[in-house]
Length: 449
Image (cartoon, rainbow, N blue to C red):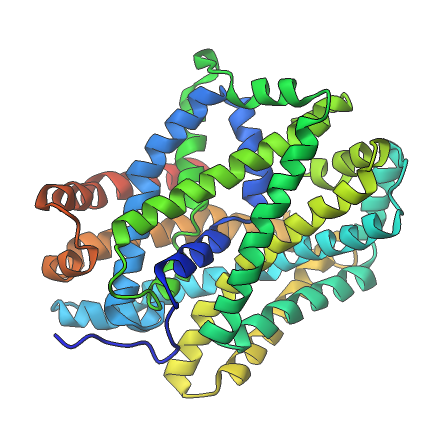
């Protein structure tokens, strides 16, 4: 069969794809959530369970998304519709890709609001506004930010423009160029902050919090947390990896590439924990402070420390870069689909979708001020969209993609693309994708409801 080519272009190399996919996977959740749930659920014992879950859920589904994208060389909707038809099934499987793209758009609408908070804190640390701030003052400052729709709208708009600029430039001039700059910058910032954390009094406490092998803290709930995070952390179930996979070089091995992405994603999360928690422990703060830690506890900690303004600034720049790389991947599948479906220019498609996400974001930022009384099932717009996407749409996407790749697509298509070193390894991957991964994600889906 003659190899298909994406009309959008392709990554220059396997390593660019790895960095791009890692950038998609590494987001706000990685840098705070994973280190925190690791410390709360048994440290090293939890990491071990998490890695097993990555092997049984994250990696098999990610391999499936990539092979579907690379085989069809199209956006998720068209890729799934075409492969289903070639395999003798209905093109309506493309609706799964459509749901994934919608999920990405909805996530970006409220993700952009949080990214806007980060941009505000980058400027606040740069100007010294957080120097020597007390805990009460930090809490009041964050509350004042949430209550100010004008400031939230400004930073939300700035972030959406940042995303639109990159995506509109295309795969090579936009996504790839941004990846080449932002991912090395992210790694360097992480290592600099890790070096800073190692110089603090709390480094040993932070290390023990995250890596002490405490099996007594391992409960069934901890296993479920590991299972859920192993799926969500790799940006699965919303078409981003499928879209990125459609630009992947044919000669690149999907198996070894996905293992590398899973490894980098986990390493970034662990290093982030080692950079954050020593600072928390050095200042006698609660590591279980939840979302408020990033915008209340950490600014106080940096404000009290030597060179804290500089390293606080670097920390929020790091968070901003992670948010930007993730946001780019959330918008890309929908833009690719609009270009294919309606033959519009990438610039028009990106600006159009940017406006849609921007408008949805206004409803989300209003949740904290002028629309705080508008609720859906007891949740404001921001929380309702978060719940809908994380607990319903993403898991459903993962389940359907597993079923599609293992049961619908012809085995030969999968074998040609996956191209593992032995037939046994391919059979193991296919068995996991058929029986283990969809059941595991279904358990997460049911229990999260």
